[in-house]
Image 1 (cartoon, rainbow, N blue to C red):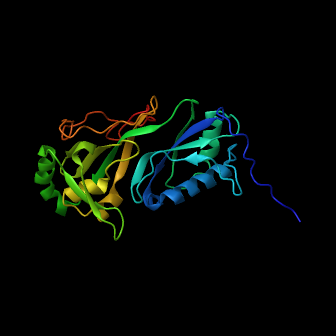
Image 2 (cartoon, rainbow, N blue to C red):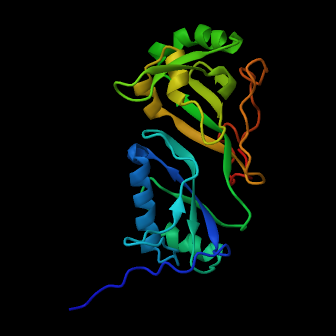
Length: 262
């Protein structure tokens, strides 16, 4: 009777190599949950024969994480995962092996080594949502009102049968642009917490369940220099809400990997 040995966990050392894997989530695979996305990525990494580092315990698992998970149904032009390795390999070799086994609608964009002191903290995320013609006419006045508002109260239920809480969306909403067809917005992130595209859609009187599944997260602004989270704008602080942002990275037009920002 043959047996298969469990993956070797290896020593837990600070010098273990880490790499950042950037890929897109497109088509129907945008409906993958966070758990299923991790499982999909794990299977691809195992098939690619990367020298993965494994957790310890009865059921060792590859050591990987997604620093900023998507909401189920939201596509991502640039999704980022961090993978621990058991030994060093060149980024080109790793990228070629992984690209060959990634599933359809999950194209691999880049693989790069992370410095031992480098940690990834998301500061803001940009989204694009195409709006149906029958809903577009009402948005001119609603977007204008949102831009002029000092506060944007949003009600959200954490879970069924749980109390509804109200919070101010305004400090988190950095940009809001409407061109008659496409809604573009940028949400600030602090300590891995932020508003959702559905919060903006609800405030604008749109069907959040319908439109959030059409949302694309076009870019994420990453801070790799400091572990301290970026605080959102103060309540009375005016930010660039409503101003046209000409930085192509915020609008998802930059074809290069993020330069630790969007």
